[in-house]
Amino acid sequence: MTLIIDDSAVKRIEELRTAQSKDSLMLRITVDGGGCSGFQYKLELTEDTTDKDKIFDNAVIADDISMPFLNGSTVKFDQGLIGSEFKIENPNAVSGCGCGTSFSV
Image 1 (cartoon, one colour):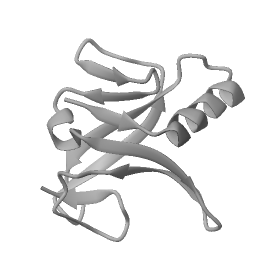
Image 2 (cartoon, rainbow, N blue to C red):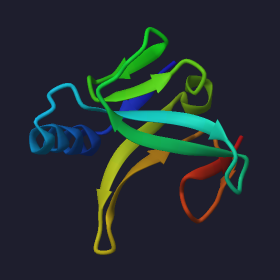
Image 3 (cartoon, rainbow, N blue to C red):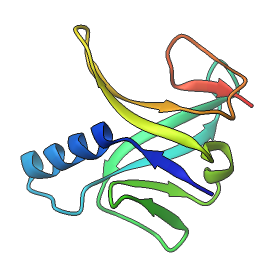
Image 4 (tube, rainbow, N blue to C red):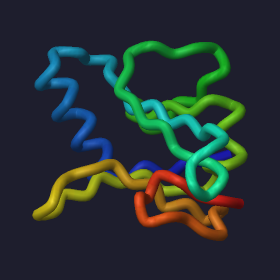
């Protein structure tokens, strides 16, 4: 299983590591049941990992339960006039909602 980490996401995580003086800071992506479309992404910055985690580009962590839902996805960091955010482009999602954090498969 694979997760594609765009250079924009790696760059932003490196900026956050520097700003927080935490060299091992990574973005954890978890897929939980719920949200308005059935599943939702949970994103958090952490230094903690477990033996069930998969680490991608030394920047993003996903657990083995979430990986089937994320397989083949691309993680990006978008900066815009309204705000900045990590985004997940998921080829497994057949629909999503306007918030961008909820999807169905």
